[in-house]
Structure formats: structure tokens, C-alpha cells
Image 1 (cartoon, rainbow, N blue to C red):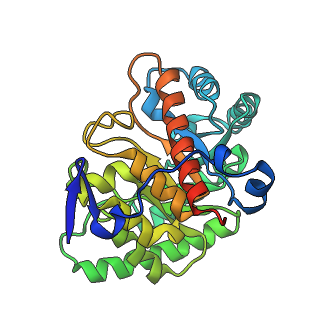
Image 2: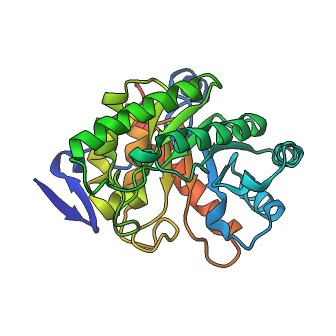
Length: 307
């Protein structure tokens, strides 16, 4: 049974874990902290959320000024020549950033009749990823097959992703599959993280993981904290935006202090990407969002650290 607290669905079991303690710095000497603390997560920004009308160089400047380490792309590179892609990689490095993930495969992996096209597009994106120094490609499923039983479609999806994983592994690329809620895409096959886990079990490839988009998961199913706990070992990228308007954390129905505290408790240490619409000058809200995440996760890690 679950109950709603501060507009956030949590279980009774979770409520006892969410107490906030003193800061890590005040509780733990730096030497002990360095010896016992797991690696800290790294932070990036999904470029499209800054606005499609903002030039690429300006996007890089905003993300760098806000103290982030990475940028995520969604297809900006599709029209770049090889020389332009190399130049973009140089510009990204010049701002002290890396491309931590990129989308750009237009054909969904659940579009069974178009698997060959999906794999061709993936090969093209992998080529760009290698040039850009990116080790992770984001995949979305595409539509439900109306004339196919869900179990059969999922079996065919797993076969397509196994082939995709082999292509990606040859270039040392990780694939992350992203569920999309049906408010945003009513025909989407993959709509939740638990369904993604079921697909991963069938695919059984180490370089296929889950992109846990908190905005989509909340809109589709809620119960974000328990789902994170259940799937944390299969998650290698988290996207952040508040629900229901994709605003900055704290502007909607989610309690991000609890989300970040839970990530700290679970020892999550991979990438966290902001994918919200910043209001006004984007640098201050991006700065605030990153600081809030770091502070909440650090406090919780201090509580979890051995005495």
C-alpha cells in the first residue's frame, strides 16, 4: 500500500529512510570521506531543453557557466559533415565539457517491420558518437504494434536490441532505453522503467541499460522512489524535470529533496542530466538545480557512511 506525502507517492517503508542529517563536511573528516565515499555522480544538461533557437555555442557557454560537466544531444549532429562533427567535438572540449549521451535514432526499436532501418540509423549515430567522444546512445521504442500481442512484440524488441547491443559493443558504446509516458506519446510501446527492466532481462546484454526519466516515470506511474530502489543497478542515466510542466525541480508536484536523498542512499554515481525548461536566464536555475542535488545526496551519503 502507498500513500501520498507532499504530492509524492511513497511507501510507508520509504518514509523511515528519508530523514535529513547534518552535512557531510561537518560529520566526516575529509580523509575518511575520501576513503569510504562512493564516486559522486556527474551532471549534464540536455541541450534541446535550453531552446532550439539558442545557438550551439551559446548552449555550451550556458552549461559550462552553470558548472556542469556534460552536454546531451538529440540529433543536432545529423546535418554536420565529418569535419563539422570534429570541430564540434573540439568546441565542446574547449568549454570543459563532454558529450555524456546522445539520441538521434529516429526509428524506434519496437517498430518491428523497420528493424533494419533502426539498425542502419543506429550505426550512423554510433559513428558520430565515436567522433564526439560519446560513450552512450539513447534509444526510444516507437509505437505499439496494433496487430501483435504485447508479449510477442516484446520478444521481437529484445531480438532487435540484442543486434543493436552487438553493434554498439564493437564501438565500446552503451545503449540506454528510455520510457516515454503516454501523455506525451499515446502510442509509445515502452512507457515505464519496470517494463524496461523486463526487456533488459530478455536482451541480457551488459551494455544495455535504463535511462530513468523522473518526469516521464512520475507522469506514467508515480511511485518513483520504490522504482529507483528496485532498478538502481540497471540505471546508468537519470533525467530530471518536475511534473507536470517540465519545470525546474521544485516547481511542480515532485519532492526532489527526497529523490536526491534516495539516490544518495542507493549510492548512485553515474550521470544525472537536467532536462527542464529554465525560466529567464538559464544559468541561475541550472546552478540551483545542480547544487540542490549535490547537497541532498551528500547529506544522505554522510548518514549512510560507516561510523
